[in-house]
Length: 169
Image (cartoon, rainbow, N blue to C red; front, side):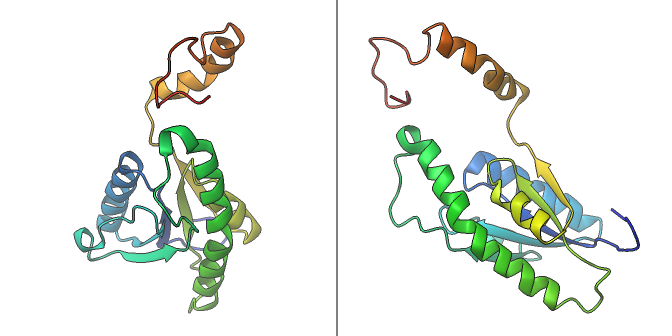
């Protein structure tokens, strides 16, 4: 991670607040920490990670504006949109403060963020920081994104005559 005269030994991880996303991000952080990287986890307040399980990490909570437990299956898109909108400004403020405290300006942090937390890319781009996406879903899930429009066009989605809490109506 060396480019144009600066070194990256500080990483800021931005996990999505679901277990299947938090765990892989923290596992990656553990591996990178064992290689000498300093790890900061910037996380939404909703479903915060267990900080006691990673005593060598720094945890920064981002105000997310989620005041009650959302109905994730029904309101997933609205929830993620709100989460990304509400976390952007606190994340930018946090990174700006972090950059301002750097003893050496050639040691800027690199951002590794979950694909669902797209606000992190916008902020890192604005601050001219390097960033990397961590895609935590399986290849099968990725292929679903490509199949979904066709299934919807052919009338398979949403299923007709079936009401489940997991279908978006």
